[in-house]
Structure formats: C-alpha cells, structure tokens
Image (cartoon, rainbow, N blue to C red; front, side):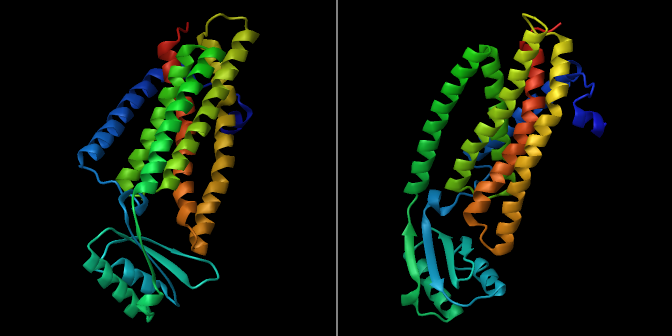
Length: 302
C-alpha cells in the first residue's frame, strides 16, 4: 500500500468514497459551528492574551528556578497568563490579567519579596487591548480582500464552482483550528491571528495543485467535463504529493516547537508554530477529503 501510495499508483475510488466524506464534513461543520456559537454565547471561554484583553506586565532581572516560576504562576493574588524567559539572561517577564490597582500593587510586592528584588527595579507596565484589536481588525480586512481576490482568480482560471470548493475547504481549516484552540484552551495571541492567515495560503496552495492537475487531465483526455476515471486517476496521482508536501512542511515546524520549548524561548514561536502545524495537517486533509466530496456533488461526473 505504501509503495503504491509513494508511486502514485493507488486505486482509491474517490467518486465512491466522496458521499461518505461529504457526510463526515457535514458532521464536522455542525460540531465546529456549535463550538463557534458556544464561544460567542459564552458557553466556551476563549483564552485571549493580554494583547486582546488588557493586563499588566512585570519584568525583572534575577536568578530564578523552575519552582519559583511555578509558585508565581499558581499565586492567589493575580492570574498570570504567561511568562517569558531569555537564553543567557536572568530577565523574566510575567504577564497578568487586568485587575484592581490594589491587587497589582500587592502582586508587585509579592514578586519583590519572592525574588528578593526592590520593587523599584521591577519594570511594571499596563497593557491595553488596543494592539490586539488593531491586529484583529486588519486581519479581518486582509482576510476579506484576500478571499475575494482568490475567488476571482480561481473562477477565472478554472470555474466559479472551483472557487466555491476552495473557500469551503478554507472555512473547514479555520473552524477546525479555532475549535482545537477553544477545546484545549490554548492562548490566542496576535501571532496566532497571523498564523491563521498563513494557513489560508497553504490550504489554497494544496487545493489549487489538485485543481490544476484536474485541468491538465481534462486537456490530456480532451474532455469537456470530468468523468469518474479522470477524477480517480488524478487524485490518486497527487495524493502522495500532498502528503509529502505536508510532511516536509510539518517537520521544521515541529522542530521549532520542540527546540523552542527546550531552550525556554517558546513565546511567540509557539504562538505562531502551533496553529501553523494544525493548519498544515488540516489543509492536507481538506484538499483531498473535503475537495473531492464537493467535486463529486457539484461537478457532474459520469
């Protein structure tokens, strides 16, 4: 099986499995939609960073241990959302949620006593949610423009039906990534938003490759419409290519996450790499098992 998959000589009947994956897609959308509605209604909580919610940051230079960091994260004064350390440096930054001035002052004194550092040497700063809102607004604006241009280009290059299928695959990838973040409780930062926009490009890349191969196959067989044989032959040939592309893209991203965590510099690296990894896996899945069912449904095949 693996040899045939590698050589692109598998005999999977995508036209036959299309309806089954179409039903799976419907179930997925119902689940993702429920999670999205639940998040808007407050049934599921979003773990938003201080860039979105506002909060306070505390930066100090001191010697520390993992137990010290654990104590600060589990303190009863302020909820610390995250911390950041730096290689070859004693600097440590704690980010806490927005609270009253009394609690913030008490937490400042707590850090001073904990690390034996004068409070005057601890750099304290209030962070408003403006930066996160600004990134979100620009991201949504860029998303609308991006999808509009892509839909026009795909419609011009292929058919308008192809652009609808590509947009459905994108919607699937975005909702899947969002649902994982909500259910696991991963922190959403501006870097996460940027990674989501990057996912769109990757997902489209994989989908357009399949469309292009289908068009080439139609020209080679001189067909005006797709038929079952061409659909199956084309997708069997590009199946391993999609898997290989994902593997070669995922391995460096996994390395970034592992190495960043090992060196203690995960911060923005993890914020960007984790959704990117989820998107790559989802994009590969959707380019085959979301695209094919819709081709089977929308495009008339014999």
